[in-house]
Length: 191
Image (cartoon, rainbow, N blue to C red):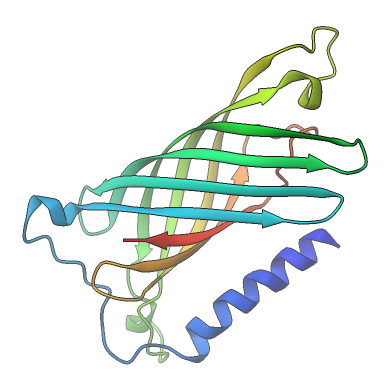
């Protein structure tokens, strides 16, 4: 049921992009100066149910060329489980790279849209509290959880430098005790 809700949410975000596309091309980012290669923004994830999760991921990076970019992100999440009556804070760092497989879907279809499809690979290192995420005898303190995420994202330009995005990321080192389900859905913006 939860995956159906996430997919319906994803469709409500994608529908305006396909149904009301921009007529003017804005997706071609120009690199006139070195500063033009840098980007920053933030990703968000919200989940409310018996498990509540509020996730904020500010990020920054650099375009290596017009299709390929790399960067890093800080991660902060508030996690609450009403069934177990506990809550905790999760923080960490993400290093990522992504590649525009399709720079402009409007060039391939009759739909006039600047929508880009990007593949992403990232490495996450998260600080988690042992007592909530491990079932070992020593459950005091925190530990680092390392994982790689792979996925696909849609980027819709909303100006010369700005874009809205939504990504589906899969955790390659999935543990059932983690607060994140596969796929992990993140939405946000780039500037």
